[in-house]
Length: 115
Image (cartoon, rainbow, N blue to C red; front, side):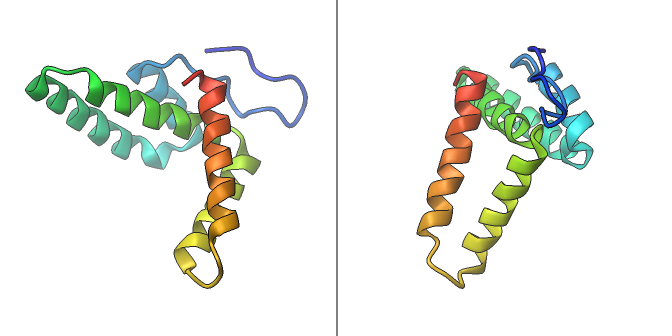
C-alpha cells in the first residue's frame, strides 16, 4: 500500500496495490458490506477473461474497485458522492451540476490511483 497522507483528516487507509487481493483487503476494512459484490465481480471478470481469452474484464474489475477504494477511503468525498448520486436519482432538480461534480470526483480518484 502507498503512504498515507499526513494530518488528522487524511484517508482512512493507504491506497492499496492494484491487485484483487489488496483491493479485497481494503474493501474489507472500509466497506465490509461490499465484499460480496467485489467477490462476485471478480468471479465474473475471471470467467469472462477465460471465455474471451482477454485481460480486459480483469482490467475493468481492477479499475472499478480501485476507484471505489480511492473514493471510499476519504469519508467526506464518499459522503459527497452519495449525496450527489441521490440528487441525480431523485430527479427533482436539474442534475447537470451534480453530474459534473460526480465526474470530477471520479476523475480525481482515477488520477490518485494512476489510471
